[in-house]
Image (tube, rainbow, N blue to C red; front, top):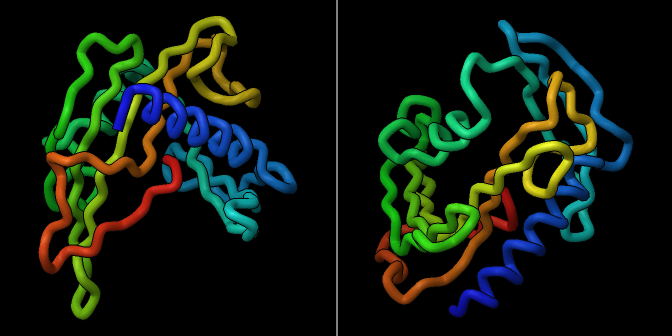
Length: 172
């Protein structure tokens, strides 16, 4: 698919994320676990209202470092126990927003089959309320943020794998 196709699906994902961040009834803090506040909100997605969860915490690292860690395949196994493997299918080094096509495979308990994803992902940096970072409920002391967008995207170099179910990531 072309860069224009990538731009189109990433902008749809960005709009869906903005909608999810607002939700239906607003985010409500449910409990605190360690140093993380856990919030719930009801979010409309594809005509269904789903319960979404987000964690809010102060990090001792920069937003850019946090984005790098959550997209690093070697580090992912430490925070996501279902993650099996992943690799970059295509890296658009010339892109302003660190765009990549990535392949990720996840473990599943028997009798469920493993799942894999092929996504176009992009890290967007934001400063002073510019596009790309957090949401309008900025709870930090500054307006610096990072948004990691990802949504399913087919690529000729990441064909279906026998015995693995190709999953669809609407946005993330």
